[in-house]
Length: 339
Image 1 (spheres, rainbow, N blue to C red):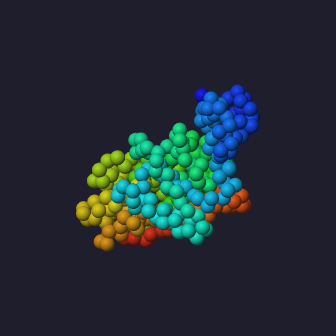
Image 2 (image 1 turned 60 degrees about the vertical axis):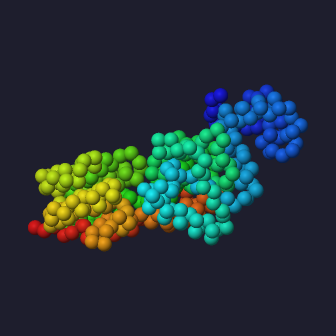
Image 3 (image 1 turned 30 degrees about the vertical axis):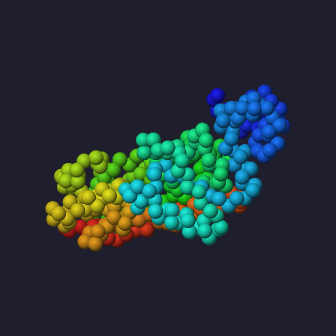
């Protein structure tokens, strides 16, 4: 059965199932009284509920009224592999600390199978309704699933800015536009006039914001700004920069910035090329090679997500779309241009 568009009522469910509205109410409210209904009636109602996607909204509202003080955390990628621990851990620390302060327990949704490296929020036996609301984290999130959560009225907050024409998606994100503009201005102040952006500048909102901030600052300051795709070896990117006359590499992917900085250092080109890491500059730095760039306030983003979600659940007035400014990191890889 196709999911019906719009907000369904118990009367709609009853009509689709061919039963009374009272029967639908008994099933939705649970308890022993629904045993009075025949198994055929229960099966018909549950088939309509599951087929239309109605189940998440009313049951979630029922749980919210009980105030069980339970927040869900859903991650599109697995949390625990070592390769992703550095990315998720600060968010989770912030979420845990603020949840404890506000008196909430946390429920980490892990039962959804991982397919092609990602989970799905919705499945046949979704357990989202067990929590009063949910914090959604992921490098790449499913826009359709987020839109469905918003349409169902289920309280949630995403970590990371999400484009949404209806402005219904609540989020706590990073202000990549402002911090990228500031770093381009800093490069300009150090005498650099030709910059090379290493990255696609497309896809996720965080990547588009980086590219937009870079492009706007280059245009405002009258600089030369080129772009090259990152899917080549660091040595090839450096050769392209040298051939074009660029003196600063703005690297969209932070670990790529570390590889470029090491290559520049190994080839003794630090007097000719600077490197800027557009994220995780402090986390990825080595004692002998401290990256210049910015660091996301990930722990504070986690805390703010809990505060925002708590206000939404409790129907308190709150700003639903928040951007926090990343912290700039001076480092050693953005240097004054030598004439």
